Length: 426
Image (cartoon, rainbow, N blue to C red; front, side, top):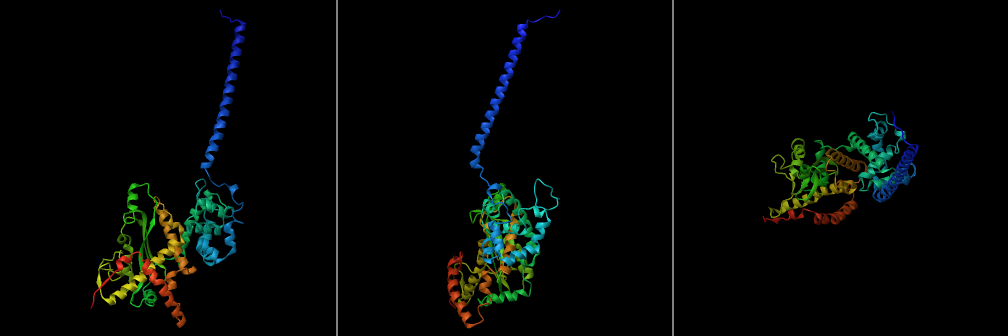
């Protein structure tokens, strides 16, 4: 027999169930309202700490009416040099030398697309000239990506992607054109280089260039061993070591780059010693400061330096050393030409990506070659090439300039304390 329930009890159960459902719906709606308000307040509180530029904050079209396009289309050498370090004709030379072809025929790497896809240069925010301008602006300044965003009308993420791609193909271009070459002189070139020096310093017969080290600040590495390798105890900081050799024309003829800051110059310069031993004729030599190692028997006559404090010498040798100090300062001019032009080197280099650091340094040094050979911004050439000695008036002009410049050079020499000499009477 089935038990039966009173009709009033069934009605009461239905009412209780409807009441429970109603309570659940009200609770769910309340939770949605609370979550929505919480998200609103969280976004409001987070907004000041997530400052960035969006497409709507910038000029509409990156290819027209931007600050960069104003400079590009103006085609004024002064403006090009001030912003990109190159004049108009040199800018075009790099474009035609391979940069434009690379830009138009290779895909820009992205993590969300296929690396083997067909490039669509007409769809890009910048054309090849814009890409070259972007990387040159970045190399010649210390500006942040948000500043570049305003100049080129691109959001920061696009700035980063385009810049990395442009830096890669710029290096490939500089390696392929003769103006970007860094090479040791041929045997017939040493005499001509030495003649430029002797015209200013008659006692330096055989000098064809100068050498010095360049230590660039580097960020601390997350790898403790690499961080220790980059620490330079003499300078009390983390650095990347480079040794550069400049000819008397102001061109780089050798660059040993991207060595750890703790390495001694003798270790960084091993390839330079090989060039002096194997590819430099006898009676020709480089000038260096007293700190540069030159104790190898095979290069003692091919690297000449001033003597240290307390050394004894004759008056004739003192005159030779005086001219040696003046010419050795040309390496400082070369260093200044590089560091003064490429502001990016004043910021700490990436400590954790050795390959990117090396590519950046090689690009800068090859661009220096371009500036020296094509743009003509070159203090060494201005001083040592005999362009002011054709007439009596020009000789007088050189004499007055010499009186103006060289006393200041001696005073500003950072190793001048090593050049004090006790003269031995004959």
